[in-house]
Image 1 (cartoon, rainbow over the protein chains, first blue to last red):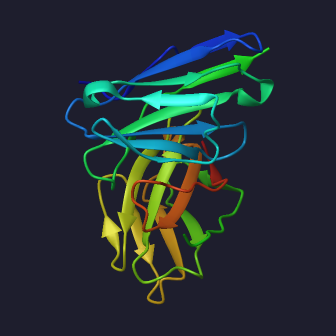
Image 2 (image 1 turned 45 degrees about the vertical axis):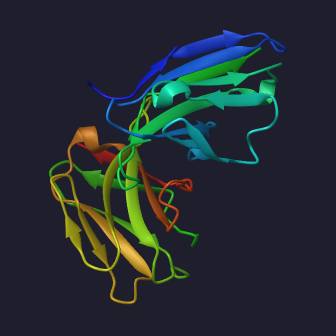
Image 3 (image 1 turned 60 degrees about the vertical axis):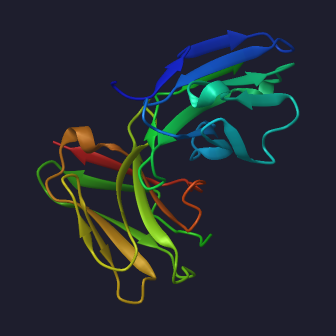
Length: 112
Length: 109
């Protein structure tokens, strides 16, 4: 287990299309997080799972966004009807406790 | 969560200690100080955290002032691979980190 894996690394999509990203956390980690990062800014919290339960969602997560973590393992983040403002790096992280997250390398989304 | 203030950028010579300051004057008694860094095109990497006492690990040392209103992250012997954005984060919400803009540290040979 080499860390948190995110796929794809890059995604270019046309405005209005749906996209789905996948995150595979470190296997023994029960917590999984999604963050979004735009150029020149720090990451912003989107949502958080403990096992399969989604415990918190940011107001940034509009109703076009949905995240799932079936069976408490991998997670998917789907964006419906993408807009240019959705262009960002989407980061996934996992942890066993909350002290030391391990982040993945992210999925860079470009909406054209 | 308390706000943090960090310089936007700093330079450091390779092999010298890099001292990165962070002000968090409104920190409350149960808030931790966390440091993460982000190397270009990668996700953030956890470095260290502390509550009141100074902390040291294999990556860095964290010095927290007695009044807890500021802290310093020390990289004892900076290398070119330490060039990154360093984030100081203060909070009690351990499951929801609030990142600021961070400090861009440039290590130069």
